[in-house]
Length: 230
Ligand code: CA
Image (cartoon, rainbow, N blue to C red; front, side):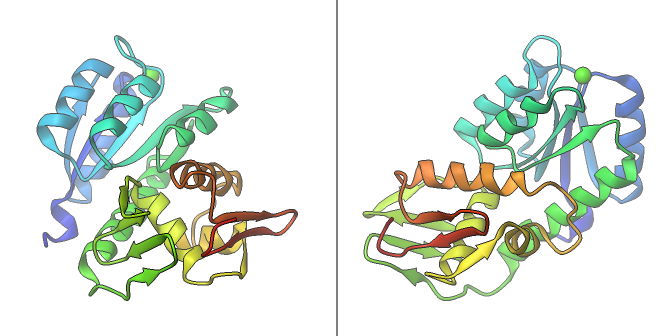
């Protein structure tokens, strides 16, 4: 496995000042940075480059960020961090439900974005480097932490890294209620300061992909995995 310093990051953003600042910060961390300044070329670059992580602005010329996200998700589970405007509250929820892993709200400090990228790359690498853990078996569901694959009734379910880690965390403790705060800490890491709503949207994605079953909402508390389905 490559060392973290050689990770490839694709930045899709049309604002020159942000491109300049963010790529300078990322190169300082020894990441390989490629930039694209509109949605169309961003999508092309993502296909050609196969980056480890994509930072994707929502407001983009030619093809907007949410459209890029939708198309990218059809072909790849690459880790995606959205850049959203503070005023567009719905954008981040729509973005997460379309499969983005995380978001950062503009205006942001480049240091904050770099910290989020580092945390994400650590999660990606932890997933590929740790020895395979035990496969979790349930009557209709199999969860393999080694390959990050999930089978529902013997059909492979296509989950992003974040969705997989969320499901795996819940399934490791069947019938136990985990709070949003606990899930944020276990999946996103102890230093994550994002909103708990992020958990709700990702749980919604996992649920939808599992046919609406397996994860129960415990009102006012959190979520509970039911191995036999809900
Ligand atoms: Ca923009």
